[in-house]
Image (tube, rainbow, N blue to C red; front, top):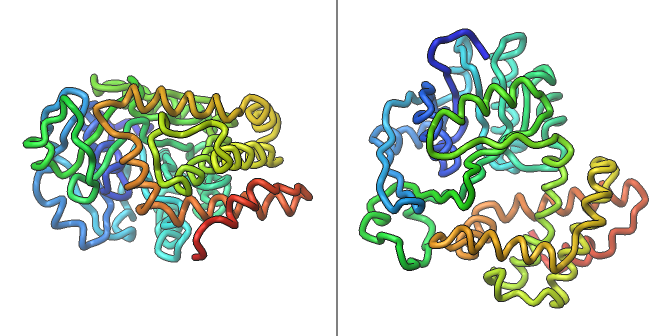
Length: 339
């Protein structure tokens, strides 16, 4: 971290992940600046109203700054840059230019980057593209659920205040005390960010091993199986269902990619259709009155569908390049609608 008295954070993207992250960092005493495309500036020109499914109250978020172009990063100084774009957007042409601008602005500085985008070994790609040092970049993601209220049609379960929810810009739910998760690929960055985040008084930041973090992307295989099943609640999924079984076997094949080493092999040996389903059922129970199945149908079923499918296709290509057969992953992908 820099030696600034007030920690400073630049959040790239002001969707639900970005705004909810910024709100909690603001509670922690950080000075927050959002980097957004120009058309998002109007939305951020007014206070952001958040509905909390935790205590069913509205939170007002103000006091942040806004930048509208990556070139404006030149000459700035931040303790952390938090990237909240999805993996597909980050690797698109505009995203690649953004990464290059981040590299130019922060190479050789104390600024650390939290990569909240999802992809297979995305950190290695980011490091090469940006030219930043390995000690500057870690993975990080929102440990809570968050959605834009006007776009997600969420069921109203007992306890939810629809009169308040309807007036909010974003809504969030902490199913566990963990509101953010970072990995240990750059330990000092991870511990510094966790120390900052943990000042917010509402949720904590968990720090996990880098190998454990990386292999979690294999969980997109059963997510795609849920898509093919029509986004049912976990309690409505039969663990012996052929589509679910296919998703789980594809997950095991994914975990066995050489990229994940012993951590991936160990995970594949512990992955079962019943175990993954039980974990999903417990999470959905813990998240109530937030509806996880409806959130998945909104977020993974439309917003980042392309990213999810591309992750599986990349895993298949990597596996085949290594000489693995990967029949389950191939069969799962074959059932997806053609791009």
